[in-house]
Image (tube, rainbow, N blue to C red; front, side, top):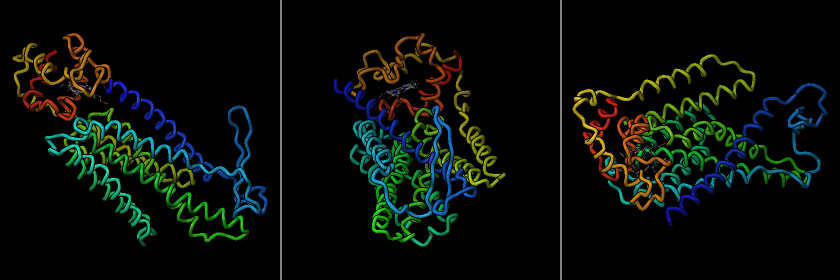
Length: 392
Ligand code: HEC
C-alpha cells in the first residue's frame, strides 16, 4: 500500500513539476524572443524602446516595451514568478519522494561508496546549499564583469562537482543532483535577485523616481545566466532514460560534454536572435555530441572472451532470478515497489528474450541494474548474461 501511495505522489508531483517547468521556461524563451525581435526603429513613440506585432491562436497581438518605467504603473502588472517557485518546490519535493525516501536504493551504490542513507542525503542537500553560496559569491565578485572568465570558472566548478558527486553517490543520484543544483540556482536567482530588483524598480516608479539602474542590470545578468542553464538542466532531467550517459564508467565526463554542448547551442541561438552570425559554435556542439556517441559505445571486449556458446539458458535464468525478479515481477518481493518498475517483468523466457537489448543496456553495458546493485551482482555474472544475450 505504501509503495502504491508513493507511486501516486510521484506521479502527481512530477506532473505538476513538468507543467510549471514548461510554463516557466516557455515564458523565459518567449521574453528572449521578444527582446530579439522588437521593432526598435520604425514609427515609435518617444517613450518606447520597441514594439511587436504577432498573430497567434486566431488573433492579432500588439506589444510595446518602454524605455523607462511608464508614468503610471498599472494595477494589473504581471510578474511571472509563481511558475519558477512552483517548479522549484515541486522539483525538491520530487527529489525527496524519489531519491531521499528510498535513499538506499536510489542514492547509494556500494561499489562507489558505502554510505548510510543519512550521509547520502546530507551530501545531496549539502551540495545544493554550498553550490548556491559559491555561485552567489561569484556573482557579487568583480569576476562577474568578465563574462568569459565567469563562464569558464563556473563550468569548471560544475564539472568538479559532477566528478565529486559521481564518486560519492550512485551515478543516477549524482546526475539528478547536478540538475537540482542548476535548477535551484535558477529559482533562487528569481527569488533573491530578479523579483526583489523588480520590486525596487516598481516602487521607485510609483514615487515618480527613476530607480538605480544597477538593480535592473543585476536582474538582467541573473536572467541571462538562467537562460544558459536551461538546455543543460533539461537534459539532466531526462537523463535517467539514457543508461549510456549516467551508466558510463566516466559518467562525469559524459555529463560535462553534454552540458557544454547544451550551453553552446543556447549561445548560438542567442547570437542568432541578435542577428550575429557565428560559424563555429553549432558545428562544435555537433562534433562534441558525435564524439560522445563514440565515447559511450559499449565495450564488448570482456564478453567476447567468454565462450558465448558455453553459457546455458539455465545459467542466465538463474542470474536473472537472483538479481532481477525481486523487483521485476508481477508481485515484487522488494518493499519499495508495488508493481514491476516500468511494467518490466522478467519472470519468463519469452519476455526476457523480447527485452534482451534493454537488459543488456542496463545491466551489462552500463551497470545501473540491479538498482543500486542491491543484490551485489558481480562483474562475471554481468559478462555471462551479456554473452548469453549475444547468443540469442
Ligand atoms: C531494487 C529493484 C530493482 C532490481 C533488483 C532490478 N531493477 Fe531494473 N529497474 C528498477 C527500477 C526502479 C527501474 C526504473 C528506473 C527508472 O525510473 O528509469 C528499472 C528499470 C529497468 C529497465 C528499464 C526498463 C525500461 O523500459 O526503461 C531494465 C531493462 C531493467 N530495469 C533491467 C533489470 C535487470 C536486468 C535486473 C537484474 C539484473 C534489474 N533490472 C534489477 C528496479 C530494479
